[in-house]
Image 1 (spheres, helix red, strand yellow):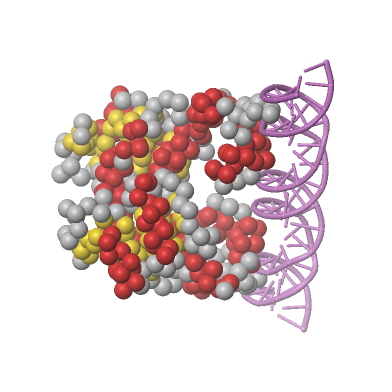
Image 2 (spheres, rainbow over the protein chains, first blue to last red):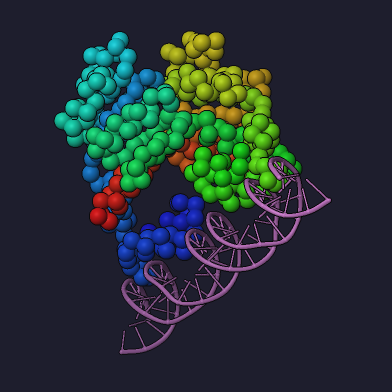
Length: 181
Length: 181
DNA sequence: CTTACTTTGTGCAAGTTGTCACAATGATGT
DNA sequence: ACATCATTGTGACAACTTGCACAAAGTAAG
């Protein structure tokens, strides 16, 4: 594939594709382009998605369930090795092959199962405490669905997903567009 | 509140806050700062979130359910006025006060209920078709959970939410950090 | 072998975004 | 009334990002 083709695919320019790729080394062959299979493989390694990751899900509510059952999740190498919830009704019950654990045993389970990533699908008022405990327990990264800005050390990456903000971004763009006309 | 306080809140710098706000006009008083109530109100108007929006949910699966039941959704003025699904088992049943409609009546319902925003919580292979029909039916914006890049006219804003990409972004950051050390 | 063609990798220019610093402005106290 | 203090709004500058254009390097064909 040429950088031109890749650019069309990714809605950008050929020069941008070449610059971005060259940042990580020299992948292509002049006059020929990039060999798709090799490029994929090298990018997967660079992105750190050439292996599977052990994930713990905190919050067995509807968002947690939707994530847990999301097929792309497992197929892309994210392996859910623990589910936690604070609701005594849910603790002990199972989703698929995972039984839901109490937060009382959070630290022990996190260590036993070598959890690397934590997904927080819990209300905002509980998120900070769990995040801090997860960091303390040695987690490497956090995917946060709670609508608060987590306070964690700089070296722990956090990705926020905030549905309301996404909707508000849409509202803003629509409002702007109507004003222009 | 001073720009300094706002900056601390939003993890940015005071100068940035002032530049951003000044872009939309002159809100503050020199020597005093910004009056919180008025600032909020004016920003809400600018963002287009000073009113409610009529939303249709397409896809009554687990992601759809999680969204529908998400309290912040309604409390921020996003009013779900229709739910669609293609599964005959689900059509006719109801979630709360909304009964689930067939996609056969998509165009009619969209118009009757004045839908402004569509949330696509359906598999990738169905997303493009529904998106095109929504645009045709006069929708103003799309929130897309399907992992494909929708092809819609430039004047229709689309926000994508892709959980796998969020996780991969975490994986990348973790991998990078480990390399540095 | 040589010529014509393709496509990368990159220096440079253009454009965009973020930061600094300070005059302008209003509040506050004497 | 005046001096002092706090804070905005903004021009000038610095840092970063994107796009252009072309030499370098490789392919292909006669």
